[in-house]
Figure 1 (cartoon, rainbow, N blue to C red):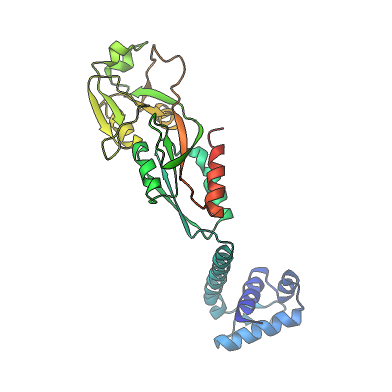
Figure 2 (figure 1 turned 90 degrees about the vertical axis):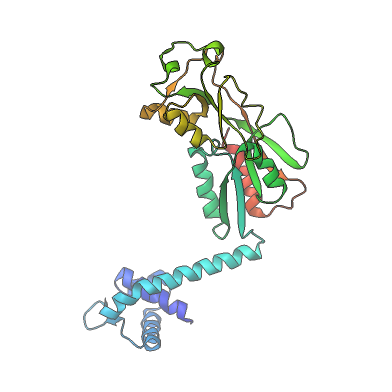
Length: 292
């Protein structure tokens, strides 16, 4: 036996309160457990259990060393998992570039399952404005991206339509537009609109100006803060808009020209001819389910 086996016996015996219960848990003879723990005590140079009573109890040294033993076993398992992942050609890390408007609570089950399926693969999430995502994926700064579809289709990357995300026009409750029962384009024209723009100044055709006065941001959370402060009106994704309305930060505009919520399409972006590892393959397929 190696020292990891001895440590495992130590931890299980401490948790179950007896050597016999540890033996049953590990499928070994009780004598093997007693001998293994005795060998560990010799290696460590201290007594882990007091055997003077019917059931062994942890000594003071045993209590102090138990957490260290658990940590060693946990690190050993992580090492084994990482080595197994490497043997299966799993990626050491993946970078997902995503527009912050798209990242909603609907992603939680996918992120949780990714963590369980690929514990040795580090996932890095980049919050990037949609106009910048295709280039970031194309140049290899991200492995996969999620962005709002543009009417200009970049040939350098592979696109996959995933679905649509509802948007709602909102303002601060104190904004002049909040008092209108029906809002027309003429009503919007003199009021400041807050829009999305990439860091290179590129806009998306999906987010067209409707007002004469414009402010810009490269992320929707900043837009929502500006709306909250009464700086203007904006289209915000459903999860942000509804949360703000529930808190009393926003009032939904009843637009006369929107019979239903505006639903811009979302694309998955990947490099052309990329040989994907198992983690990227799984993630690229799992993301298709978010907008079903």
